[in-house]
Image (cartoon, rainbow, N blue to C red):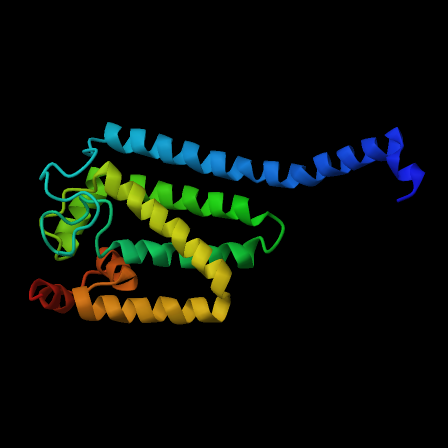
Length: 211
């Protein structure tokens, strides 16, 4: 080691280098803080809209397996949670195409969470809830609980992360495979749900009723 390395100027420069090296990681906290604020605001807004905090049944909190029962959309997770993972996959793809690398991944995730939150708030308006009951086989649907909406948003975030890890082609494969599995297991899927909300098909509705 040279004597110059022990000089005060060298020590100071090392400290500055270490300090500036940690700045990017500290900046990464802002997207996380933003997401927490979005989650808190969405929970308060959904409750203000009249949604229960959690299932009033008292028997399910984390997971409910029945996709068509009265407790669907009441627990933190249910079979429809997988459609929200697909939301995340789709948002990741759209953001990658629209803004490419112009915005850091953390902020893109924040945008995806924000988009999903807006959907959850719209989905739980009385107008959309009535539309679900009228156009689809979800006759007993009365809206999500706040806990379920937060689970949906978390699943969207998970889907976004998965898409960024897998890349475009493998994400498309996962999306398609999940759609097929959902159609087989619960007779519903993200794309079918959209179709039934926009343009209900009576034959499909009858097929779903016979689950």
